[in-house]
Length: 174
Image (cartoon, rainbow, N blue to C red; front, side):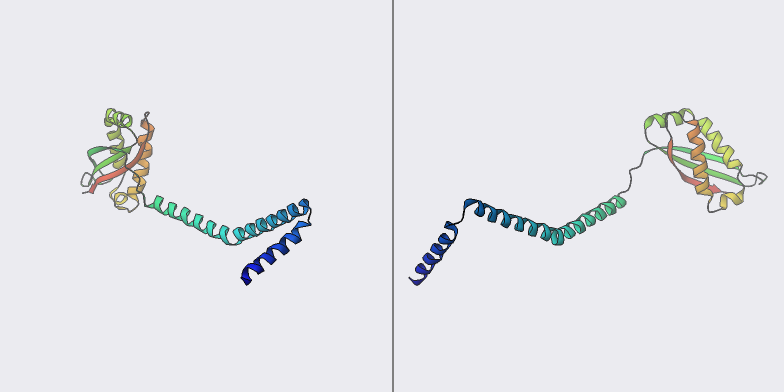
């Protein structure tokens, strides 16, 4: 019973305090309270939530880059040129190179052009390999240099597109 009387007194006192206020003052008090709450919410979000969001976003970007690094690109179409056999420069016919290469291209029209130009392409490979000495072929950098040179040479002969990569399937020096 004492609690009910206390609650009734508090409510009556509150009604007495606000009863004499004009409505504009009440509206201003509400606006000020809302502004204070908004500013408080802004600072709480800026101090606590924004740094966590930025860390989360950075972690997601790092994760996306890591997954992109782990994705192995798909292989294009392959055409193989078999049995290229040439004597090396300065060997007097005693040393020779046996090579087979795989050409990676983007689409079938390029492969069709390579097939139609295969005698010309084989001739270019033979000329290139005949200019090499046994020492050049044994050099560790020969494969990379020859891949780059032969790809560039091939792309000069093609109209339908370009060779994306050249892979040695076989490269023997006898």
